[in-house]
Length: 92
Image (cartoon, rainbow, N blue to C red):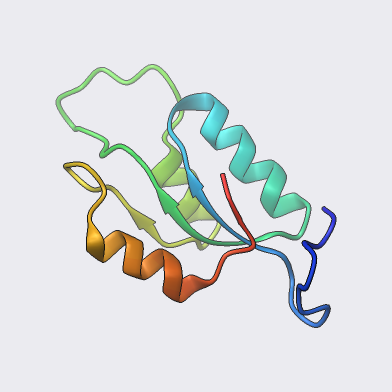
């Protein structure tokens, strides 16, 4: 992945990913394989009572050692603050 303009060449490209479903799982795997530092994944909460027929983004992120949050409502100021603190180069 090309570094964004002004990026520190000493650190890997950092991203935050908002994802769900099989597309999100595939994106996480591709980003990780490409050496992107995915600092956070924001996803829909998995529900034990739901018959899920697709892969879990949360499980995949945890397997990759990536922090996961699954807010129950609309994004709020706390999430905005967390995103700013992570200083991602990209948000997917």
